[in-house]
Image (cartoon, rainbow over all chains, first blue to last red; front, side):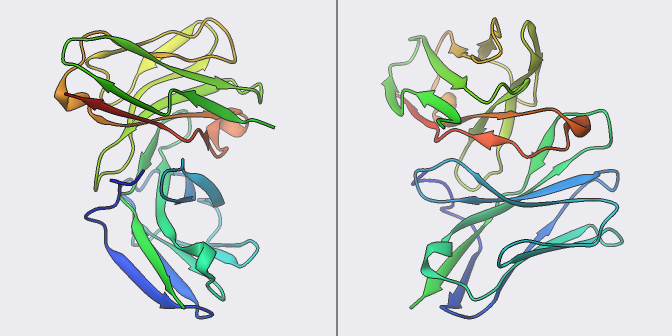
Length: 113
Length: 115
């Protein structure tokens, strides 16, 4: 919503450039990860996911990289557009058998014209 | 295709009042979740359900109650509203296939202020 993201880190990117948003996750046993996009006043929207048996997955204009050694996840957005401006956050699911997710606090992406 | 629908979108309550936040999904998903989102914080799980008749506590269940009488509906009840419950509340659902490794679909939230 409007008040979400008041104290979030902000990434400013020129339109047309590539964006890289990072996320450190907490549980080395987490086996499934999701990136969400949240626009002001809206609910989180699924972008892309990756399972722990992979280290890279590509979608349309987006790529997720997973580094299990350092518990790090990144989201790359190619040719960033004004419509990409939003808060982005990652979510991790614990080891098999749990249905609970841990959500990151998010990064605000601002696309400069 | 409506997805996850939450009502109301906004609400102001007085301390001590009660209310129910409604959530319904039309995707026949077994799993449903309630989260709260506070400024600068990640989503916190309040309650979740893995099917009709089954509910369980999340990280921050105190002050809330839920029920799951049907697959479609998962209402969240605040019995005695307190200022600490001022937040944005999101309902989500997922199919539950693949051992829970399916993305959650979110509603657009209920913005609740307790004064």
